[in-house]
Length: 74
Image (cartoon, rainbow, N blue to C red; front, side, top):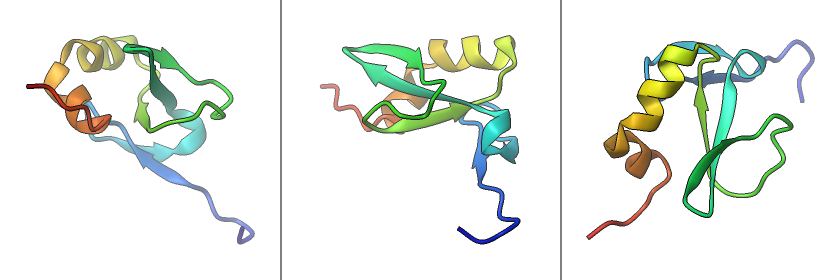
């Protein structure tokens, strides 16, 4: 990695861009969205603000979650 490089990610709910450390990584395990504090869990991850409002809105919005985790629903 380059010296001074800071990974930037985008919150899936509000669209705010921030450094990777400022956002929380969420993964889907057995159909349940859970936090990945160490950024080590397998699978597709979605980043969200640490703001509780933003996170609850994201968890309620099934359309964004389906698209973010690439889930197939009939």
